[in-house]
Image (cartoon, rainbow, N blue to C red; front, side):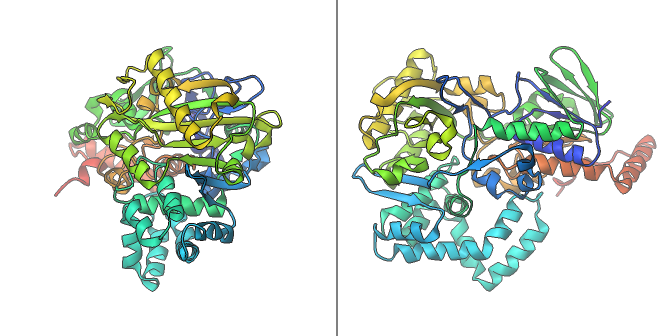
Length: 549
């Protein structure tokens, strides 16, 4: 009987399992698919000579994460690579905003858009220099992040905290317009905000866009050498060297609960795996509370809150094998960037977001475009490019903003039609792009979900990044912590604080909570509660206690 079972071998599940194994517990990871990784995988499915990342590709949050750093994955052979430039946002007139790892170079480029914008960029960087380390610590610390928050509060008091707090909750359009006279700086902030499902007019999108921009400048948008799967391979090797076990092709269909405690899991094959101490679930929130745990074991208020859970936008992704570099009109600044944002200005970003809000399939989709060979030369033959792009579409399509009558069935016709629309968008900024396509792969929302059940309808962040489902509202109004109403069961997925991205924090937070619950004092309290329960006293579950008036 293992001490802990982890459901799901995505990055969060593997981080959790590693930390559990580091503490000396025995641990088994049960993964539904035939290989580990979840949304962190690579293959040669587009072209045999090209390595393609199936889902995620660039990892600024992994580069910044102290959790990933402490795992010392370089000892397992993991190596990181950077493109010459972090990020570019070209415009159809040939201008290009560029995020560099060199702060002075980024500022100089923005100055070409408008006099004074270099100083504006330096101002935003100065704020990051003062607050960045504490923000990162707070982001990757279990909620509430008491120590990082105390340090951050002290720094904020000394630096005009109210004004800085205002900056963090501003919509990115407003922040960009307040800080920059020209389009360049505005595009860097707004494009980075749209890495999440935050429209330019959404509260908090300014803070998120600034955070991602600063992470990109300070840490880059690195990629694992040889493909995203190299990151997973390193996590699995580390776990197995510590005695952990990863079992693929084992889909968990139930968490067995007795007397309010998780005691086992049951697989689709009928196997019951008893557990000694804890079950850690790297699964989506609706899957955990709507499928794996029977409703009679959950408070009614949680089930009611679950009805209000909001997914992030659905995703449509394309992978390409290209015969040569992308022929960007903007030239080298765009060609040498690992990530390219494709939209002709801030208004086009707003238009795209508005169409999504109206449940329309966008006619000019905003694209996150990845140039993987530019970032890692091992991805394809010399002189070629392994590329991808993704955009967002509504979960429930109400109409097509284009002329193709896309309904959201995502049958073969609709997939091909929308893929052509994505490529036409790239052609606006890189005429001749389509002539360089040797092969392409389409990953529509249903395809992504079939590949990974956590990507419900193609949602890639485990739930919306909007403020109403962050911090102590994530995944539902409560404590923002990994503990669940079932003793010994912990939420270890991106559905938990701090949310999506490959940084390992939800998995680490769940592992810490499980390990902490086994300490002698906690065990003594549990025994006392059990004794009281035998006398007719029923302790109030944490979820219910926090809701009392």
